[in-house]
Length: 112
Image 1 (cartoon, rainbow, N blue to C red):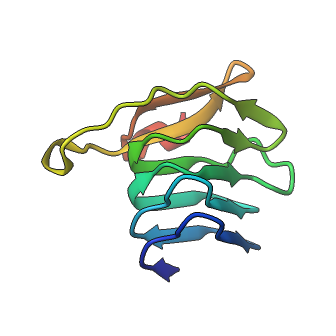
Image 2 (image 1 turned 135 degrees about the horizontal axis):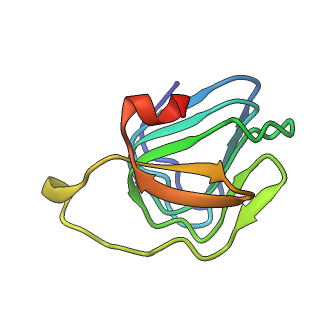
């Protein structure tokens, strides 16, 4: 678990789950062999399932990342939506039908 902002140029990797309580700024890179959870704005690159697992997920309160990776899948064009912090709602990136999709987070949706 990391508490605080991941600034530009920061690289963080964890064997297991990675939880960031704060923002991930542009040009920061975070990765984990399992799931990545960002309780803040995700504007840097995130890679879940860095060991090749496509069952991993990326969860964030605000997706603005230029690149998302799950296992060997890469998404270069996630929607960029700068929103007021009071309107942030959790979203998750998952691999469905061979592509990374960003959808509203629902705890039960992880077990589909």
